[in-house]
Image (cartoon, rainbow, N blue to C red; front, top):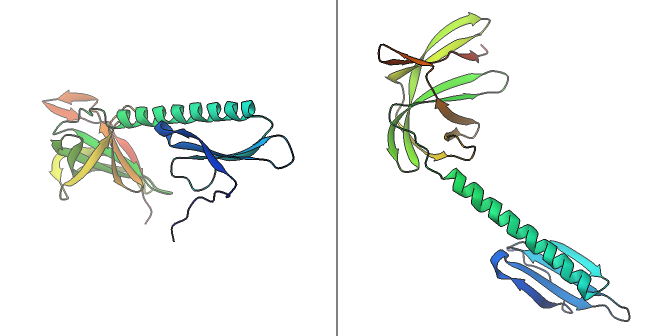
Length: 196
């Protein structure tokens, strides 16, 4: 059952700010000075606030503060969304690395095999591993050594750098080569660990 806002019958709509979907209902207080104000923002069922004000001026001040706060938040959300979907610059052949795990460090490498606007096609690739510790070691990607079928993912620029969500606990980030030797990129070794 869909929940709805509960507005007392004695309350009447007294203020609407369409840009933020902010509304205020008010009611007089019987036999005493003051006014009751109940505010809602967006599609919220619960009031943003529900206070007794000594005067209309005090209520107006609260409304002004609330609207300013909502406008600021709306602007920040729009700014974050614009940054998230900014051009990512990923190109076919570039390598992304995902490092994740609980009580162990899993490392996966992906090669960009296709770019379509904000989406990229990624294919997991093999890695060179050097186990130099107890159930741990270092690894590097092997470009072109595909081991799984391509997957399609959206690219986010939320942090100013391209990132791709692989699954719920794993994000992949651009892995830049440290140098190029013989026309081939050389990547920095990354730590990994596992449990038997």
